[in-house]
Length: 279
Image 1: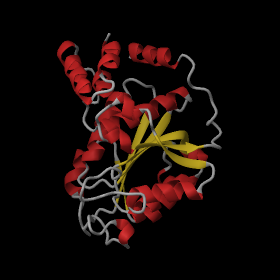
Image 2: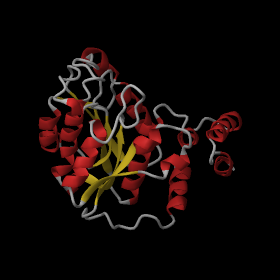
Image 3: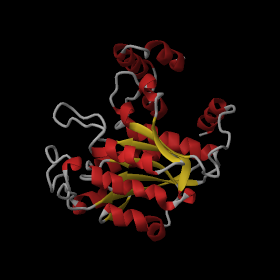
Image 4: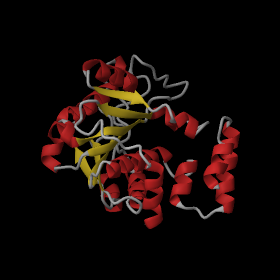
């Protein structure tokens, strides 16, 4: 009934989506999946990406995956990710590791115009490690220059295959370096990983575009890689009409991954419903 109500009310006008969310909150218990599907959870982009990555891992018989956040600052993203992971691992029999990459000292100096020096200042978003660390339950912090930490990450941490990445490094240069993580090989990733880029839409002051920042880093990655692509998730703007964050969710496709062509769609809805019902 709730799914039908959402379907009737959420397309195509944003006002209908808001009304649907309110009706669900009024007439049903605030279950995590209800709130996630309605987009009313904290940082819905984190919940959506982690949920879908974990679902894919379960369908492909992975027992464990990693979630990564690039650019942690005060740690609110990591804490939100921990909350979502706690809920999602109650649904799927998949363990989740969480890693946060950061310099610990805030933004470095912009290298050139591609790092948007008119919008970002060196030293912004500095992490208070002593305050954040006691709040973290499962997240592991990875400090250093992202170009170096991406090169040594899997060797140093023996991390599970990555299914989900959140990019919030702001700069073109830092995002470009963070994307080198995908060069580590198929064993270290799901065949399709959910990737969120925080600085895609912006506002009248930031004026993000294809020639600077994260958008440029994505475009160059796709130009350099013939069998690895970072593509838009077009479905989300229909699922969450009126929300801005769906425009920033992308999918990393490793076209030659050994499991890329494994069929996952047959009776998927029923399978997931069974998993949820059992838990």
